Length: 114
Image (cartoon, rainbow, N blue to C red):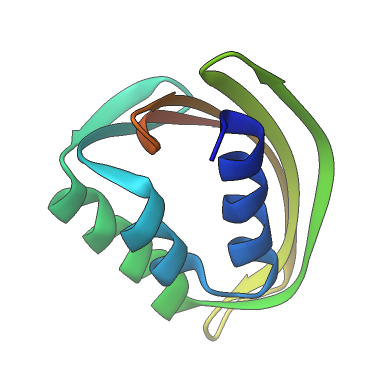
């Protein structure tokens, strides 16, 4: 699969609600992830735990895809999440996920949001 196809597969998995399965399949063992470019989390195990917390502690009402840009091994995906922390008030969060791909896996992903 080329990068365009891989990015689309990740998008499809997230839109289906399979965030953890998508993570398991498309993220590298040494992936580095961050929120707003700070507080980097290194390694698949640490990042999966972070994703598990997110999935298990929020109710998702709607996930909407915005713009998608793929250029070589880089991708930027615009998302809107309508969600609520369990027991909390509903919020809408817009974010852009900037990904770097290598060998069919995401090796870096930075989430930018307000």
